[in-house]
Length: 133
Image (cartoon, rainbow, N blue to C red; front, side, top):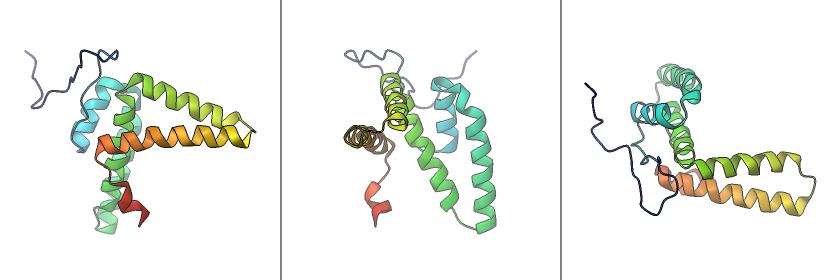
């Protein structure tokens, strides 16, 4: 017998070529971990290690800030990785940016990377204006 999640993880759009794309999960450690298990299982050890560190820091600092940062970071990661084409494009851009010596190309690459990250932040519900203040 299998247990179904309380919310639908699969959000398949007819016009979407990414047939196994999942919906952006709520930004909780448990929901993000469940999404990672489906879309990026190789990231689970890093997620678990970083979660333990964030919990430890939160306890030591008596602050929720380390856990909020952890959840935000991983929500953006999931927002990127749930779109395989987007994730592959981001990796290609980052690789090219690390290799180029052309300032003009570097600016173009950085701009496209920024657009991908902005989109992922929006999907993850991250208020970027808050961090800019």
